[in-house]
Image (cartoon, rainbow over all chains, first blue to last red; front, side):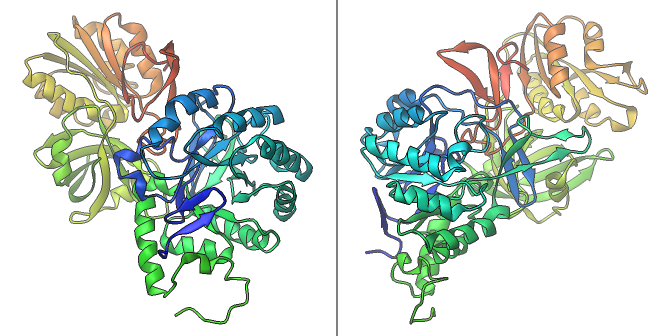
Length: 310
Length: 250
């Protein structure tokens, strides 16, 4: 087994790095830069049962070491995605984590049913944490009872393992995590973006047409690390960690906090080669650290251990 | 897809906020189409997004860009000295199609002016008659006027009337006389005004706020006037920034 190989429910990954949902489209644009086989997995853009046009522009605003986005789950609808987007990814030997969203429980169930039957979808990710849509999204992600109910309903129809993507915009993320674990979730993705705002001082108005947006990038990394550190001690399902990962060192930090795999989002925009670069650097770094497999590092920040790192 | 650390050759101040920068590298030789842009990385973890800057001119392996120092990103770009490098992605996007028509009217405003210079040069070389209208706020903010004069007749407009025609670029269209096709780049209100003022075929280049620059993030989508094959939007970074006039809602 290589240093980088990890195995999570449904996702047998040659390395622990995947591009995060919403930051990579359905892969076609980045395939012009590198061979997607390099990736551990691909988390594709959120699918809703119906076509969604998303929010008005401006949809992005830059902030200190981060960015706000309010795309609003624009997507061509689950049927179009299953028929036209996912088949293109079949030529790569990379598992797909399919992100789904909706306004109602029925929406999630419908999307899960249809997308989980695609041959190259190995797991689904329930997006209960999008801060940029009026209905659904975050409301499911901020009430443990609703999140658990939704998880249960989706688990019933999904043919593949189900990950729940948690929102940091809650008072107690551990309670949310425990609720969806009890409801049958196979894993967690965390964190989604933090709700934020930027005001244009020349106009005196918010920069984003949606007014608020989700903050991502290096600015949110310490929040993600802390939340993964807390949650991983309370649940026994694996965590896909995300939130401002830019380097191999960041990946190690997320593992030590308690992650079992990671997703890279905003860094893809800074550098389209971010994922392959991190993967190469990570292999080198683990070699230097004398780690035989990266899984050994999961939760090292809070677990008792005998051997110190070299 | 090209990504290269281009070497800075020079920075030159054109007006109080407008700078001309020359960069050198092998990938510049692929920057053949006017209207395309380069996506420049100016920081490591801040700013997180690249800066889309239009191609102003290309000579062999030397790229010229003309940009306005506006926010933190362009300020950092401005601090790059000769000999330093800039992480450059590009060329990106769809540029201006070169017309078969005999007379082209180029209309630019503000930082929408630079990409028209590369276009003017290529049209001129093909034997197309080039007419140019350049819009500025005031005399002190004029740049690139002389460069355009190499390729055709140039009319300058200033909002305060301190030089040329007083008013906006559209106030000078009548003076420019007959033309077969127009090309325009500048702020949206200007593009709208030009589209309304002209009944000829034309191409517009959008200045949209972009994220990834390669078509993945959907930050820069624009609605189409009429959905085509079920698609109601375009991505400015990948499907544009140049569109046929009337194709997208500006």
